[in-house]
Image (tube, rainbow, N blue to C red):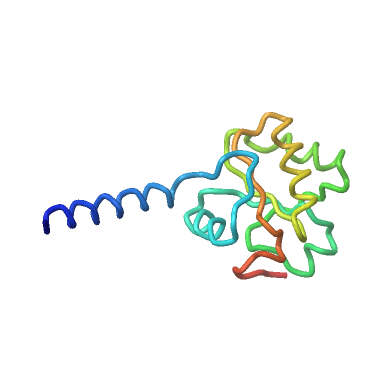
Length: 128
């Protein structure tokens, strides 16, 4: 009986370790907790899809500003990115980041997600 319990505990730990490093499915939203785990491990690059003024008010550390409201500029910016790398986009509440994610997926990006609830749903640190 003890051997079975030990085996189950080890299997559970192994499975949870595998999901920690797994990238989110492209085109989906991820939680603040998931993003924190991925960014702490250097697994994703962050794109802030808000305006310059919003970005200066506070953004997630390490995020690159690419205002999706200026769509032509946004499309130009994403052309310089590696399309095979994973990205998470965010805005204030989630509407603009969903648009940014759609544009990136339409332009050949393989691993793009957005932050559920935008920066308003972010529970980690911000910087100005």
